[in-house]
Image (cartoon, rainbow, N blue to C red; front, side, top):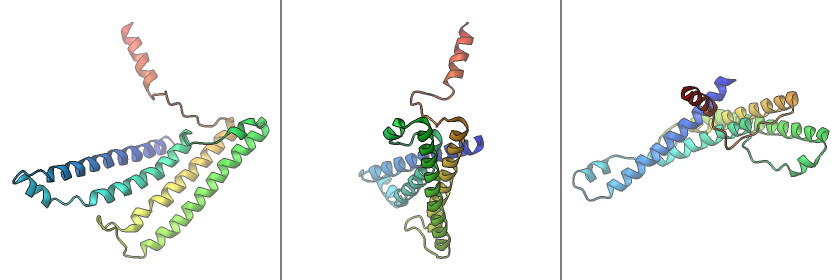
Length: 189
């Protein structure tokens, strides 16, 4: 599971970093192309960055789909649990498991419908306008992200049934910080 966790985090971080870099390059290119500097302006105008916006949109879609699965795994999705928390422990646990399994069912259905759509899209020659990527490749984010999210719902449900604990995101926690503090205290002694 650690491999999948790290792969998920790596994909999200890489897409975020790449999208930021692409947007930065496109904005700088657009700005510098408008400066009346002979030679530089002519050279920059010859460089086509019209694909940057389309690429960023696709990267953000993929990032959102994998980010949603990450949110389920880490407990950072927003939930309205005012009524659930007022129930007795027995009923609270049943409603939580029902909610998690409903999320798994919904994302499995979306994943299956998305996979069917991608399969039919792959039978066409449709490509994106600027990047000329096959559109089935772009839409592949829907089934992959949805199935991963379904898996995460099931994973959280099984963990909750076994332990009674849900993932809780601590906004103040920095992973690895305890090790750094311990190393600093050990080095200072």
